[in-house]
Length: 321
Image 1 (cartoon, helix red, strand yellow):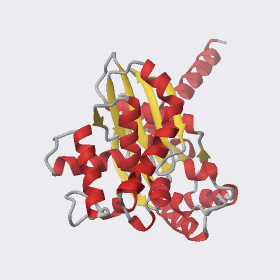
Image 2 (image 1 turned 45 degrees about the vertical axis):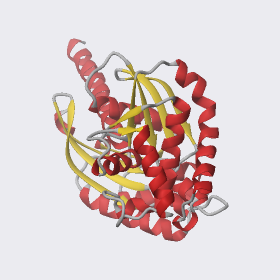
Image 3 (image 1 turned 135 degrees about the horizontal axis):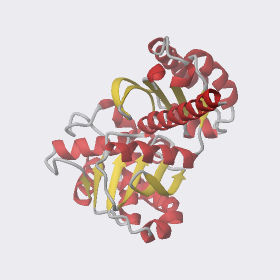
């Protein structure tokens, strides 16, 4: 591992692009640098599921900045993954050719369940070891990943076509929020979640964990408004829901800790989170700082260690024979 002790993960999400660089120390990864750009690539999908040129241009500009930061990295020390928006876009192949050139590294569009596995890997590495089962929910821009696992091993993985970008555009056009729109978004999310409810409730998880921007944003708002120092609970979700409806929009000047870049996607994310609490029987949720990009780094580390082990085995046979 000494040859590649610094690794990098690039996450081309439907809401944000992330670059995370970490150093390997005794089998653990210590973050060194992180870049993030809110692009809302998913918002650039047209009615016929094609990425518009404006969204592509913003994405390519960001990838060029990532390329500058990754100068000198060997190819095998970097893994770049694309998620929901690139899974569904009909013109993704053409865009990816330009994206790979801008980034300077291959880009892999991963399946939803692979995304779920990597999210769980990242979150489980960031948490203290535990023998009980955990439910991890990651509300992204275009999809929501739900995982039940124990220790480092995921046991149930699912990716649903519900996301904070797509739901905010669909149910809250122009940022307008009212009771009817919120109920419609929650109902649609509950219908999607219904397909996994029986299996996930039967898994008898003991702790719920949220990851990614929606969970972190809601936690920050609830903490700043006096609900809890950590995490998300039903009372806090109901307060935030009623506040958005009363204000008729997500107003950062009247809701403490609401960041301006979260305004366009908060109502859709909140509707999905509320539906998940209801359908999956969640009373309280911890929030993790880890997400997909952290899982990508640890998965890359595992691949490199496995390869190094194979190389050591070959060298041993060469010496013997």
